[in-house]
Image (cartoon, rainbow, N blue to C red; front, side, top):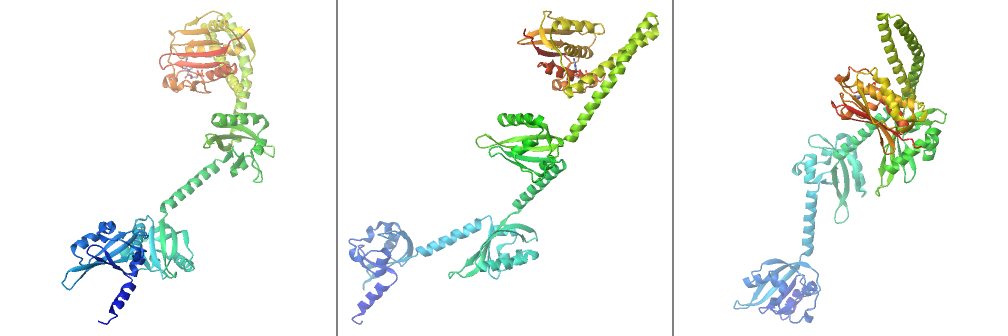
Length: 595
Ligand code: ADP
């Protein structure tokens, strides 16, 4: 062996890129090389009393079993942090050095730092599992368009298994009519441009078209050269369907609004801004040049209806009352139109009303028809009134002269005509009253009188021609300030109804009493009664309970409507308590006259 062999080996040992450490069997470090010092970032000369057997980290990490097993040259991966070195992954290889007698004298440990290799592998693993678990189809391809990878979601979205499609051209999943897209995409990618959420359609295995949103990024090699593309395809079938459903709904709504000529408006109360749809402009007779503001809208409201509209808006915003109102507007061409408007309030996060969302439609035609009808009613009843009054007078005269001459048969006929004429007169009076109520022309001539006396007089008048016995309860005078004739009319209506809807042997009880600041008159019968759900409706115009048992009773359903209007005009109330088959009690109240 040449003399300088030792120096030679020492140099090779020092220059070896593998960190090497030699121990005695007692665990004392005998020799280390440069790589060892670099790995652990420590100078061997500065290192005192290092004993491998006391190095808990090595012991715990599994080096110990190898020492014990006799150093068969196995390799073990150990995590290690020591001295100034942060957490590293090391691969450790150990072997013994024996003397001539075969006895172990030294132990060699060689460490290799494999942290980077492990990290890269871990990263790859995480990356692969992310790709596999993604809900989006993730595909990679070369710049020539050859499919290179294909994840699970791509399998379920397009129907091709990875092994079926990898190696095939990307145009396999592009509909023929959209092939040009691929050229454009590739040209963008070559310039390093990413593509975000590009909505298009792709072709599935079963020639099914799949709406997708594509995000495509270039894939680069180590040197930054673009070598392919990764593509994320998101299935947007549901989104597309939802969009279509929304569009169709909007379309239908628009159609309905157009057909009904309904305009929609949105008033942001907080910012005081107003938005109109086209129909609102049409309804108000203004062009699109009209500046839509709350103030300009108010200008279009008929002067007589401004207050009414203002109050309704106030009530809606302050009390949440439904906004449902008919009012007149005057177009710039001075045309008066009737509109009906409904709106709802939308509230902000603090529960304060923030918007009023409404729909408006033109009801001029309907209002005109209603007006025509009520004009006709009013005119017809007026015209009928005069001949009927004369007829009534002549019939009475005829009746009297026949009666004087004791002509029984003609007398009987004349009295029938008299009855029918009275009924006709009553009917015409009722029709007249209805038209008065509707045009707001029901005049009241109020005076102070004793309502008890009025009840007594009315009852006496009716009793003669009535099958039922009428009983009056309470005779003490109660004064009210009211229109006496109209009150008489209400009493007649209630008492004749009581008789009409009960049997001849059933009594009618009329009670008059004070309740608080009001006088209450109740008319009780023991007749057919009224079911609960009809209690409100019977006070409506022309409403009659639709019951076969009642078909036999004549009437138009006007009496209670007129009575209610009369009582209402007196600031009183009218109501009914009744059960089907158990008779009814109709009552009304009037404010007392405070003298
Ligand atoms: P009508 O001329 O039909 O009697 P009203 O307006 O006076 O018109 O009454 C409306 C309806 O209320 C009647 O058709 C009847 O169905 C019901 N009604 C009114 N009074 C009574 C009563 N005392 N008992 C039972 N039903 C009644």
